[in-house]
Image (tube, rainbow, N blue to C red; front, top):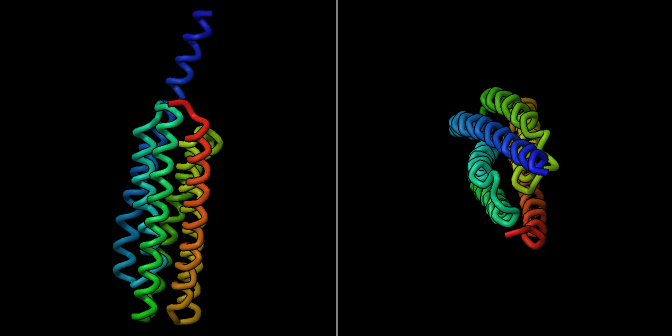
Length: 206
């Protein structure tokens, strides 16, 4: 019995160590892509790039919070997941404000800058998703981190589409259209994380 308990303890410790390592890697990647996306958004005047950059910043904070509660109680993880949902909701609000501003100040973004930044971001996000894939059905902490990473991949594809649309039509509306679609995705994701976190909080241990 003692040997079995010892082995179980070692397995849990090893799992938590792997989780921390993965979260540290995806945290570093998201901080780097946020810096790149923000600079590209300012240079190109793209709402969709700014949306993606804010999403990456929110994800970096999410991974930092996830890292802090690895090994914590289910209820503690659920509380952090609720805060993650609030971060996603905050990103949605920022995107909505940016869309409104661009509607009042129309312009044509630089599609080449959007395309290059979006492609680099997509590659980075795909790497993060691959790293988090084994934990997508784990506890609420890692599952919510995977949810954020999956959103990033969708966002990367959408921003690439925005770059193609701006280049093809020579207009700013494809960029705003994609930013609006990302806004809806953020709202849906926030609802999913809130729901998952609340269920875990109600049923979890202190």
